[in-house]
Length: 157
Ligand SMILES: [Zn+2]
Image (cartoon, rainbow, N blue to C red; front, top):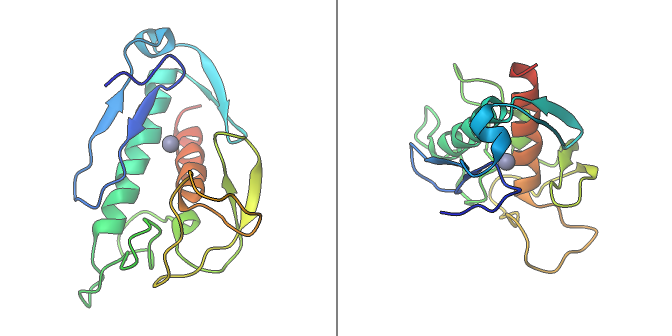
């Protein structure tokens, strides 16, 4: 899969226990584990390392969405990858909880960091464009990106 020169890595959204990550060897910063970027207001260096952390966090998010609570209920019954709840014993992922609680999210394509609310578990939030882009719609992918950029920045300093 050719990701193009500007994309360092990718995680295909999937409701499976073990999602794959795709790394881009055609990007020089990736091959040398060098370079820097700013994603969602989080500065990053060592692009290979940062991309592994970032995409690894996405696969963790997919794992959480594919999991079940102790009562056996799906942690993402509406299928939008936002999770019903943090699971006991797992790392905190408040940014991707499917709730109407406002939180900071990021649209990586446009850069702005937004305060978003989602519809709550049981009502599908649209995952990503393309669709109509209204001021009242917040894409689930924006929460996942905010969480992954913050996670990677916290580990890779
Ligand atoms: Zn991402």
